[in-house]
Image 1 (cartoon, rainbow, N blue to C red):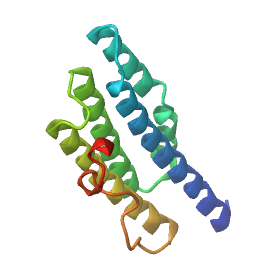
Image 2 (image 1 turned 60 degrees about the vertical axis):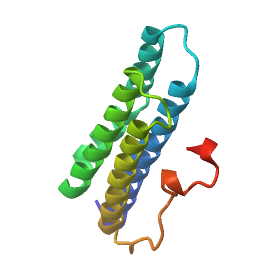
Image 3 (image 1 turned 90 degrees about the vertical axis):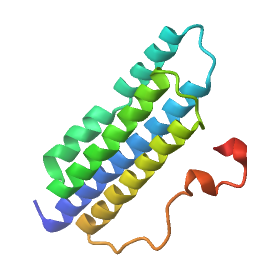
Image 4 (image 1 turned 90 degrees about the horizontal axis):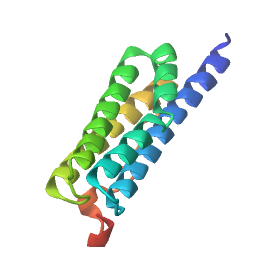
Length: 143
């Protein structure tokens, strides 16, 4: 494989993983906000969303191609999302202190993962955060 082809492959894999976990986080949050007929139904929908998100395929691609520091960082993001999902399954309210702490942990892990991915791709660091911290929103309803 040429160096250019290897770089494009890593870019594709990194992009697939970051977009998959970002979409999964949004899906979990939306499901947790919705009314459900029962706690069991809520738990089932959250677990199905986690399982069906495509994260497993994206993760396997990461494990096969990415350098160890990127794999380790992507695994940290996975564990943060798992804790978020499990919290919602257990009834944690969106925007509660526990939810904000878990979301911040995920944001920190994702920022580290993206930094390592950028290094792997040979691009410079970002000079500003991709998205604001939860407390940075001026609209309290956005939290």
